[in-house]
Amino acid sequence: MGVAYAATNTSIEEAPLAADRPVAGLADELVDHRFKALPPDAEGLTVGALAAERRNLFTGGFTTPVLALSAESVEHNLALLETYAEHHGLAFAPHGKTSMSPQLFARQLEHGAWGITAAVPHQARVYRAYGIRRIFLANELVDAVALRWLAGELDSDPDFRFICYVDSVRGVELMDEALRAAGASRPVDVVVELGAGEGARTGARTEAECAAVADAVAAASTLRLVGVAGYEAEVPDASGERVREWLSRLVALAVDFDRAGRFAASAADEGIVISAGGSAWFDAVADVFAQIPELSGPVLKLLRSGAYVSHDDGHYRHLTPFNRVPEEGALQPAFRLWAQVVSRPSPEQAFLNAGKRDAAYDLDLPQAQVVRSGRDGSVRPAKGLAVSGLSDQHTWVRTEPGAELEVGDWVGMGLSHPCTSFDKWQLIPLVEADGTVTDYIRTFF
Image 1 (cartoon, one colour):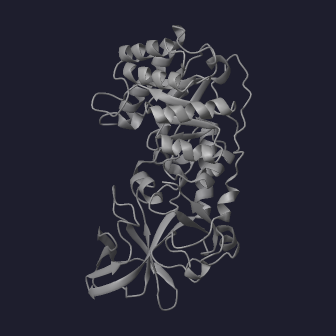
Image 2 (cartoon, helix red, strand yellow; image 1 turned 120 degrees about the vertical axis):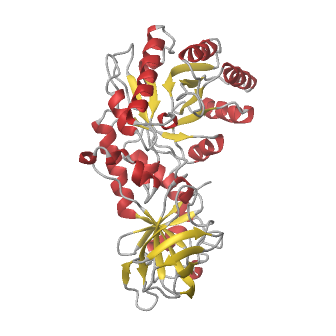
Image 3 (cartoon, helix red, strand yellow; image 1 turned 180 degrees about the vertical axis):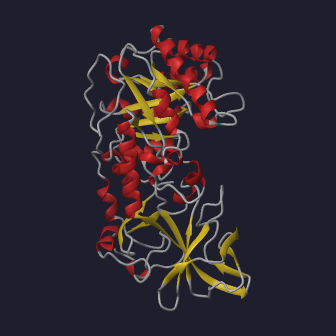
């Protein structure tokens, strides 16, 4: 998939996407006590050597609890969003905060991503350590130390493209002051963030405030205004109608800025950026961005959804736009947390050896899905089992009368909210449907 623009009158040469410092080096890391659940007898092997052994998750020496990522589901989800973005003429910068995994970033870039979105400077530093050449930082960056680092990155690498939010005159002043002090030779590209309404999160609340921020950018030689952006999921009482109304405001702001000649001349070559799109409303983004009128230069319609790569069995299963457009496909949940029954104190209760340190719990509790017998390895549905709570290191399971479950059994659970699932595991087995572990996904939180 090529980078998608609402092209009008200018051709654009696509910048290289691949990292020049490949993630292959992660395979050289040694397996040791730092990584939960990995086989004790693998101590001292490299991650690559362990992956080459293609051990089975259930019989290969892994300890519980262990988080598994479905290889087939990840590949399906990567391909689906590539197809969706291409079909709707969208460029795509998935939010990397979801996984913080350079291996998954590389796969997203291979599947057509324009770049990777970040939220804070630490994330951008991880991205750069693995050669990511396009970063969209969906925040106003006013930390002087981080801006000094950014200036150095831009000055040392002419192929590095960085874009971030601005939403206040004071923020622009702080950025300009820090970049001047750093002796920055390349200006930082910025987009004015339009807030999603009163009571929403960040962003200038009115078009007049956006214009004042744009004026401040124009007066700062260290910055270039290249577009507008925002986050539609913060629209109060979000509905399809309300979200589309706000997205139309965002597009109108871009049109007004373009007519007023506010965008940097470079936008004529690199694209006027109009960006939105979390994981809950990208269908609305696609609909409204399809109506963007012709501007003075090509338009980079930049979608930033990130949770799709693993999807989930809770929050995003309910919110995904593919529920509204099933004809365009369906994402597949890729996470399953396996824990072992360590106590069965009564017919109505059981306890597993996974807890808040292992499972996401900020939005929904895990869901018991399957049971793997501790006696013979047979797998059955988790009938009559329901997770009722989590302690730090235990899962509380309510068991209905007659439910088949005993100490030693493994319980496979679906999780809700990918962002707080990835961050509890530094090395996650990538597992095929038959249980074969083909790789290990490294995260950096």
